[in-house]
Image 1: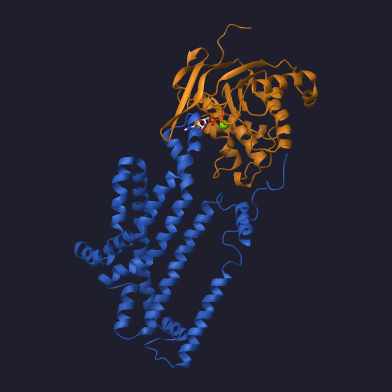
Image 2: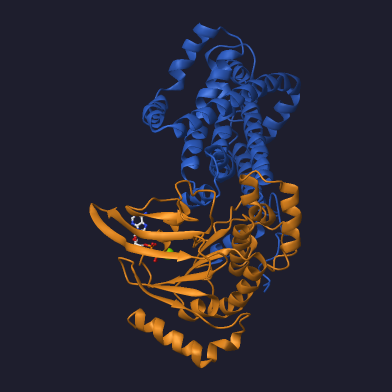
Length: 254
Length: 275
Ligand SMILES: Nc1ncnc2c1ncn2[C@@H]1O[C@H](COP(=O)(O)OP(=O)(O)O)[C@@H](O)[C@H]1O
Ligand SMILES: [Mg+2]
């Protein structure tokens, strides 16, 4: 492995919230990292601080303790440097689909004509062709999620954070979406930090997985997934896959 | 990966099709009842003229009515523009800083408890008998709902949407123009619709205190000369003017907020109402 510092590293991060005068410890001493072009998943029970961690990494929040390093240097100004897809799709209802997708390039002051052209070419990959002019309210959940994902990828950041992007979808749609996400990722090859609470999804997608404990969130296990790529659906029924599943479930205490 | 709900809105209907039939029928039945009542009890026309007499009187006085209506329409227009400017600016100011919010909001609420009818004569003393006092009265009557709805609408922005833009490195101005203002528009339009409903009545109020032209003046003069039919004719014109103004705002709203009035949303409401 190279000695270059990883694009993103979280070091000894802790975070507590004050809720009704009480302290709620959301994260306790979390350390993890993602290498260039790596697909890393964070898996943990609901409420263990996964979203909080992504909020901190993106720069929306600062940790109480610990640091976020970008390429080995303290990332003091992280806003605008990391692509973030929050749990809700957050499409702006007053913008047509294509204008929603182009929000990133627009805000960042990039060449909009060029971005629009590229977006149009990519619409089929995201299954959104023909809906450029539709308002979000008229789209299905799956489409909205793909649009949000496309918006995130088109921000063209080297690091992308995805917070349970398929969390709100039904099990069948999730299955098609995960193979499709790998296709998309193969094309953009950004460093991905993927949050989920679905064990199979994490194994299927990732190069590496961090398992978090219940609140306060803490890394209890790190696994490298050595399934060959490109991955196909039937890998799910292999014995290696089952072994990984056992390991993660054990780490989750299930 | 497609499903059939995900179809761009085609059934876009700016004003609905038959939605305006019920009020029309109701209004017509009331007029017929009124006509019948005046005939049965042979009510004197200077006490209560029949709708038919009112219509005839209106047509007879159409030249006069048109002049006065034009005057009132002008007062309404400029006064409403003033209210729009002042209301929106005040809404922005309230939104701009917590200090201004704390300072301005209560004062605005108190300002609404002052009876306009008490201020209007003062306005005449300060600004004379010209069009200005009327414009100001319309402004005073109309600015409040616009100011409040602008301030509250801007506040109602989804914090997560704002966060999303911040992760893209957006500036305060970007967030305001791309998230908060567009999101506030439905509420601002609601304020504007309330305001425009009061606007014509505001102008007439302004005329009553001092003036020589306008529907309000025409009403006063007709009352004094027992031309009750003309009083009702000018009331009818006032109502028509108000409805027309309201209708234009509504139409503008539908055109501006096409994202808000998507076919999917309308259908959902129809379903809810069926239950
Ligand atoms: N802004 C906040 N203020 C107060 N408490 C918060 C805030 N954000 C998260 N929390 C709390 O922190 C804990 C972790 O939340 P979250 O990061 O959303 O978990 P997850 O995404 O893993 O489900 C929860 O108990 C939640 O209530
Ligand atoms: Mg979460």
